[in-house]
Amino acid sequence: YPPLPYFGDLVLGIQHLFANPELFLVLVPVQIYNFIETMNNVESAEAAGDSYPVALCQVTDGAGTMIGAVFGSPFPTTAYIGHPAYKRMGAHAGYVIGVGVVIPVAAVFGLLAFLNNLIPVAAAAPVLVFVALSLITNTAHAIKPGHMAAVTIAMMPHVSAFLMVKWGSLMGALGASGVEGLPELGDEALTAALLQQGAHFEGHLALSQGAILTGLIWGAIVASVIDGRFRNAGGFALAA
Image (cartoon, rainbow, N blue to C red; front, top):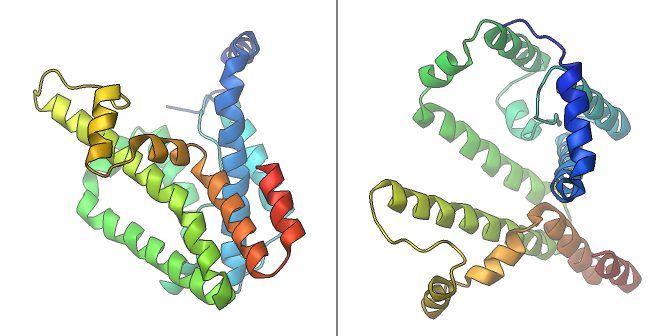
């Protein structure tokens, strides 16, 4: 499966995009997310003692995304999360180079599905848990103790996003198991029943939309208030 450019499909895709401008409502937030994700991960690396130019990382991500699009990839590129954790495990530049070699080779020779089935979820999941715990620990060491309240507030939209994913998975599992007559998530009667049980579906749904941006803005507001920078807090609130 050699990589081949798809200029015709790219042009058709751009024409379809401008013919359906409502798609920008999805694309723009996704790209904002990728921009912020790269910035966050570069900051995370700096907190672990490794400084990289943010602008160069952003430009590289953008160039990688555009080059990938020419070859038919719908996936944007970003600086990957977990630098402090991988550094703690002893990973160096060879880790990144290895990934950059293995993935393209596997894609060209059609081995991605084989590798995916070769490595069990039980082996990969603990690594992701370790990365998450390391990031939280690194955050606690990298910020002022007084700002932990801001970090906690910033995480709340992500809790809602997590709940929405799990509720959706639960409904999907019930449907796949043969349960009939299931209401859709968001059904008025189901929402009322969830509310009676203390599960605020509509609130979590609202918070889960744009959790990355919401968390950043909430955290910035709280951190500014803690530092007594009320004008900054007001500016972030107005920007929201």
